[in-house]
Image 1 (cartoon, rainbow, N blue to C red):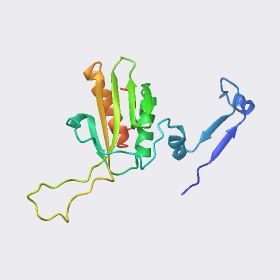
Image 2: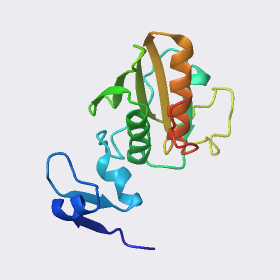
Image 3: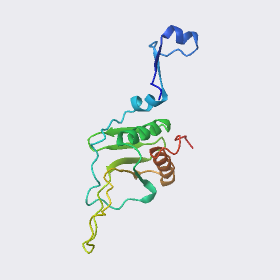
Image 4: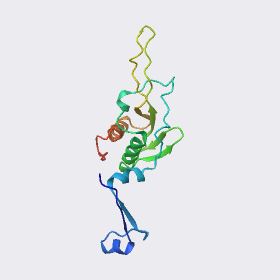
Length: 172
C-alpha cells in the first residue's frame, strides 16, 4: 500500500505552471486517499451515532439506504463531497448528526445518519439465539422539508448513491 504524499508548491512555481492561486498562498496537492478525509466539513466520530428514535414515523424506502460496508465518518465524507460537487448549501450539526441542505432551486431537505438497531423478535418465538444484530450498520435518511419533489428526488438519489459509493455524484 502506498503512503499518501503531500506535495507543496510555492506560489512562484505555481505561476510558472499557470496554476497560480488567487491569494498568493502555496497550493497543496494531496493523494486521492487523503483528499476525502481532510476536506470534509462534516466531521463525526464513528461511535457517536444514535439509533432511530422509538416514535419516528416510517421511513420512505426511496429516500433511505442501509449501509454496512463503511464507517460513519466515511459515509459522512462521501455525502459532504457529493453536496459540494452539486453546489448544495449545507449546515452540519455534529450533535444531532444531521445536515440541513438547500439547493439552488430552493429545495430544502435534511440528511440524518442513524445507527442500526438490534432486531427485536416477537414474543411468540422461543429461540432468541439467532436474533439479528444490525447495530454495526448505518442508516442514511433524507427528508424533504419544502420545494420541488422531482428536483428533490434527483438530488436524493444522487446523494444516496454517493453514500453507497456507487457514483461520482455528477450534476445531472
